[in-house]
Length: 167
Image 1 (cartoon, rainbow, N blue to C red):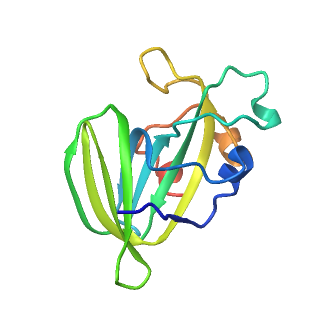
Image 2 (image 1 turned 90 degrees about the vertical axis):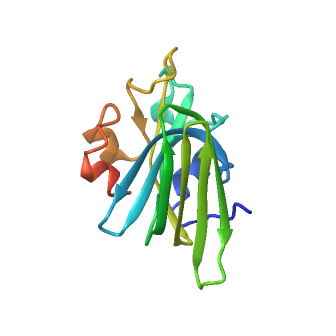
């Protein structure tokens, strides 16, 4: 398998890291399934912190970057295992012969998720926070997008449709 995600809106990640960071390994926070699309949205912590941070994050005590990765036009979904917390998950994608589709596999201790989707993948809700000693992210988040920063001081519950459904 390969990992050639076509991120349609990777600007925030590129501004932070200078390029799209490796999205093959991460801490998986949540999986949101939405029949209106249908979509699968993964909320994940990136494995590294950028060397250069935006001015809004300076002076804050942050050490982790989190984002949502949203897959569109999802089909053939299987999820035989979901036992959070998932401290280390792996993402593999494979381009399918069918035009503009990919096969996605997310695996790790506590997760086994597979589906096919459009090859166009969205990224959003990029934020920074200080990870707690127990590994949770239930603390203040500093969002890269102004609208998110105005609306949310921390990550809302997974049933918050406007947050999880829209990237």
